[in-house]
Every structure is written in structure tokens, then in C-alpha cells.
Image (cartoon, rainbow, N blue to C red; front, side, top):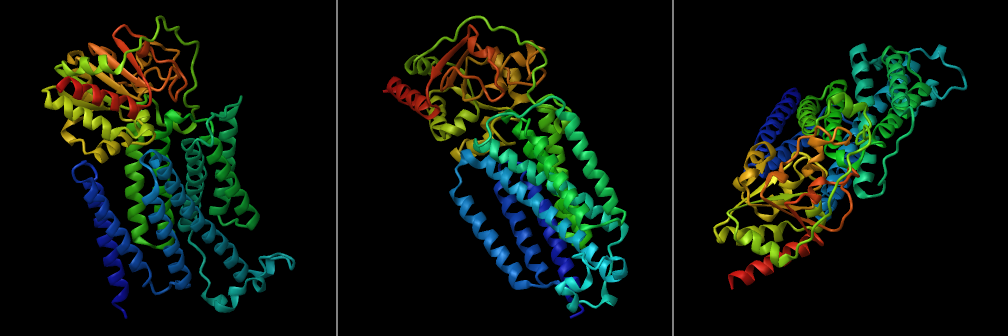
Length: 492
């Protein structure tokens, strides 16, 4: 069937188009759901076409692996709560990086084996690399052995390095988001240690790419790459997870693309490059939203303060639900600022119910979203979309900030660091320079918060002590439920 390779490449081309068109549709909330479906069909087509490659072996094992993976993903995807979506994204992203690293490992081990087949005289009798020790040798004559080209070997090593870093780093990100690792691990000379680990991995990788391959070098290479991923992520605080997730997303995409080149798989190359490019752009946007350079994202110790923070004067002033409801019921403009506390309380539906009651009273309501609110890019947008909030009521930071001075009441639900005025006023603050939502410029601010604790960055929020701020303490869903009840009582 001489036409089969052409058909497979055509399927890959169509899959690539579906990937790109799906990503394009994801740029708008109105078409994002359809975009995900389109990209999913593209992936399904690429996987099915791969089964018909002429040099594919062990098809039952591959089919079993696909079935297990799809079943596990379907089950976990159905069961995962919206509050756990960031850690699921981190975990799945890590699996992609791990898969790319595994492909690189197989290619490198295969390269070492083929060297042994072609040059058995140079292999000691006791070495596991002796040709007769490879059971598969009987199925592949020495005359059919082909070594990777220098370019293929180099890209395979690079993809393996990036994939291994993404895998171990994403697992740490998952553990932090899941609450299993709730501390930042920082020690003196950490950056130097991290750079030495990376340098050692790169040097071994260069040796492998140069054809000086051995099992010992391969094991050392992956051990160092995995350790570097761990060490790079351990000092990062939870408040910086949106940047970390997007960064490792880019890493995984690049690793898949490099390994796709080694395998000669066009679908992997295109899909990996699309994911890598999108992840890189997203990382830049997230870093800009936190006033960080990419170098600081890669090698900095996130959230480390540069000096003694300013003392915050005053006290937090409480308000009850009835007074808060009255204040917003008779306001002209209300801006609602959701944060991770909203996700934890799963209060998005109650918040939208409350907003609808205000809108019926003639109040102009908008939702303000900070680029790094929550624990992953777009976290708040996903929650509001799930609750049915119309897209035209959701504004990003740059659009909404000029409107805060004309806002009668800003209602902050579970947000902390992204509304902290210290980002503009305190050079010693770890978030200094980070663009924030200018909530403090509103005429009145109501903050729904469980207690008086600090945010994920571990610093006090000057907004909570401002003269125009009142604190409504309690669980997000319960507090908003109280506002709904009090607002209905006003209208009764």
C-alpha cells in the first residue's frame, strides 16, 4: 500500500490544522469550548493515524496503554472539582513532559545498543551492552542497524532534558497546589547549586549528543535533569504558580516537538511547537503581570522580600451582611473582584446570583480579573464561565483600572495579593512593582475573607486597613449567600 504513508501525512496535516484552529478559537471565551473540541478531534485523528505507520510494533501494548490513559483521564476529569483544576493541569502537563523524556531515554538507550551491535569488539565481556545480552538482537540483523544523525541525537538529548525538568517540576507544582508542600524551601547558595546542577546536566547532554553514549552517562543525565526540576520549583511560592504552570507548559511543548523530530513524526512536531509557542507567550504575559523577567522566573527565588516591609497602621473594620447589601443595593456602579478564595468556597454561582439581583435593581455590575488571580492562567474566567456570567461583564485589569475611581463599591471575594496597594508603595515588599487591580481607588471597598490571615505571598494587605474598606468575615459562599438573602429582603 504505497498510498498509506501519504494518507498518514495527510491526516497529520489535517490534525495540525485542527490544533491551530482550535487554539485560535480558544482566544475568545465565546468560542473556547468549540476550540477545545476541535483540537481534541485533531489529537484523535493523529493518534489513529499513528497506528497505521508501517514500522509500528507492539500495537496491542500501545492500544492498551492508550485505553488505560484515556480511561484514567476521563474518570479524573469528570470527578475533579473546579477548585482542583490548577493542580490537575500541572499534573497532566508533567505527564506530557515525562512522556517526552521517556521517548528521549528510549532513543538514547537504543543508540547505545546500536553502537554495541555495530562495534561489539569494544564492549567488555561482562558489560550488559554486549550484543548477545539484548534479546531483541535476534529480530534485527546488524546490517539493518542505523544510528541517529548528530542533529537527531542532539535534539533528542535537548528534548529529554527539557521534558525531565518539566516532569519533576510539574510534580512539585502539583504537590504545592494540592497542599502537600505548603512551604518554600530556600537555603543559602541555592541559585549557585541550581546552576551547577543545570551545567552538569548540560555538559553530560553535550557528551551524549556528541556520540559518547553509555548507560552510566544516560542515568546521570536524567538524574541531574530531574533533580534540577525539583530544585528549581521547591523555592517557588504558591502565589507564583500561574507563571510556573505556563512555563512548564511551554517546556513540555518544546520537548514534544524535539522528540517528534527524532521520531520523524510531523504531528508531534507541529503540536509541540504550537504548545511551546503558546506557553512561551503566556509565560511572558504572566511574568509581565507580576513584574518579573523571564530570567527571574527561571532562576529567581520567587516571593523573597528585599528588605523590611512597611508597617501598616490602623485596624481592619468589620461590616455585617445587611449593611453591605444595603450599600451595594443603592450603588450606581459595583465591581466584583474574584480571587482564589472564591474558588475554594465554590461561590461563583452565588456571586452571579447576587450580581443578577443588583442588575435587576439597575446597578451597573462588572467583574474585574487580574491576569494571575487564582492558581493558573484564566482560573477566574473558567469559574465565572461555569456560573454563566456573560463575557461582556468580565473585564481585565487594564480595562477596569481606570473605572475604579468612579466605582461606588468594589466587592473583593477571596483576592489578596492582586489588590494589595503595597505593590505600588513599598519597595521592600516581595510584590513591589507587580501591576494590581486599583481596588483601593473605589469609593467603598467590601472584602469577603475567612479571617485576618495573609495571602499566598505571606504578606499583609494594606487594602484591608484602608479607611474606605470594610471586612465581611466568613466563608465566601456563606457570606455571598447572606448578601443574597439581605438583598432579597430589601426588595420584598
